[in-house]
Image (tube, rainbow, N blue to C red; front, side):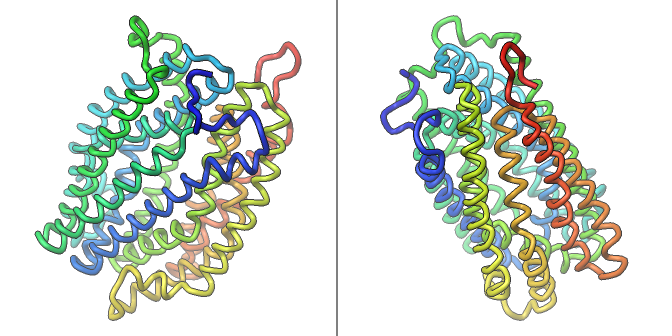
Amino acid sequence: MALLKTRDIDMTKGSPVRLMFRFATPTLIGSIFQTLYSMADSAILGRYAGSRALAAVGATAQATGFILLFAMAVTSAFSIFISQKVGAKDSEGVRRCFASAMSLTAVLGVVLGCVGIVTARPLMRLLGAPADIIDDSVLYIRIICGGCMAQFFYNAATNTLRSIGNSMTPLVILIFSSILNVILDVIAVVVLHMGVAGVASATVISQALSAVLCMVYIFRRYKDIIPKEGEWVPQRELTADILKMGLLFGLQNSFLTIGMMYIARIVNSYGSTIVAAFTIGQNVQHLTTTALYGYISPFSVYAGQNLGAKRYDRIRKGVRQMYGLAAIFCLAATLVSELFPRALVGLYLKSHETLVIEAAVSFVRIQGWFIIFLGIIEVFKATLRGMGKIPVTMASSFVELGCKILGALLFPLAMGYTGIWYAAPVGWILGIIPAAVYYYSGRWEPKEGAAPA
């Protein structure tokens, strides 16, 4: 197929586990760099600007997610369409998808960037951000949203490359972006003493340069993916289908983010110390589960290509093998979380911040015991996402979220703030049920002469 180059991976042929190791290893390495960048970002801010600055950025996670994840959902949606078109060997379909995706990305970048700038302070007030960090939180959101166009096009380009089986180029560009981001962090925070504004500016600049590199690479190397004359005008039906799936993704992400904003409000009610502990605990968990996400999330490309090729047997075989990989990575994450929590937390703070350290260590240890359930639910989500079964992943995510909210409300009544740490594991466990029921029902596999369920 002209769309695939020599080093690109055709997921419809060969051993599923070998394909995933070959395809996902660059993604995993990229996730490690991304995690290391996030650690460096937080460590530089925490050590040189203090835990209050770290808490200010951590408190924005749900607000920026609410603003930005909708557009990111659209880029995820068109990557599903592209992977399925690649599996079906439909070159024109891939070009049409690319044209529609670029148009949608540009429009959403402008609209949501403006929304984020205007609503930053109301959102942080809604979240109940502590008075001592709200101004820095608002500043961070406005800078990030002001440059969100770069992030959207970067995500669009890298998702396109991964959908056609190229995971190496996104890795190279991500490494460049991460290293540049850390260098800019040091200059902005340590040298120029810009604090929160410096971290946000470094992120926007590095993403903008990465987006440019990605798009230049696609236009030069993948000429077959670039729409021909007359194909740049988005097809109404295709654009509507992408937007529909993107809306479902966005609706799911928005509801999830609203729920997490509510949880963030609960965390915020305990003050900046617990906000900082929650932020650090999440960062540590991202570090310990990097391998899990690195190998499981890209499985959506495998599922999409094989669904497009009508290789349903390969999807089932791949899922079974993903269970084994998830179990290995989850066991490793649990062992690290239980054996070295204090060392991991210490990467973000100086030793005299004892209250934050103790709270963060409890987060890491409690959630570390339940990571296997996170692995299982991620296998199901990646599989169903690649198939385009977004309503099912929505149902699973809503169950997960509902349990997290109820847990965050009820568990602290008996256990104090540590009760919040138990809410997420309960959500993982119960969120598995809808996805597992649908997958094992076999309704996703079209019968002879029937449309997919």
